[in-house]
Length: 265
Image (cartoon, rainbow, N blue to C red; front, top):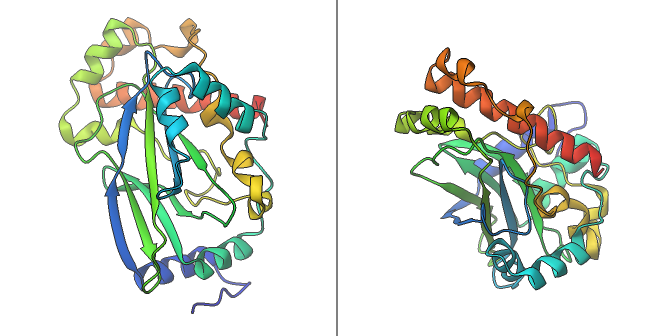
């Protein structure tokens, strides 16, 4: 078993560990909740993960499809929790990952959006909000890559709630013009940490109800109101190629999600 040394880059040890493990890759179900969902934030992909067979995704799926009672249950359990719990030191977190039976990465278009995801015993649900500009998704979709130790039978499962933002006609035309290989630009990486895509779980997640502390912004009731600052002007779109427009629109969504996160911390 790998032991993390304090004075070296702790994330290097996670890479070593994942290279030695059996991999299991699953394409995650995507539910388009743009017109129906009571959870999530417009301009985001909310990815919810749990242990396979736990049933924790049932209310997430129902809420995404417009079931108000399911939304209320999720809000009652997770809605008042802090979005960003205090993380442990990087070396402590890395050792937690290395010692785990299973950890996972979330991938989109061949790129890791979030890495080193843990589900501690007693944590029933974790969630991530990724910026999303409203363009079509890459043909590969969102995948979950699990790194499994030996014959461990633990398995994760996930669900993606897609929340497209309102777009002007010009913005929609620009996004529709993206080549298939450029659709990777329509989704951004994790907001969990400013300097890395590694998912640094808060110390509270060691306890039974800590799932509430790391679901946060993903279960906020969707706010539909938008203003002009959330859009590119038609002139801006005309002066940008589709790829540049996609990047600019994604930057707007990232900033709005970060603002949501700060308000609910």
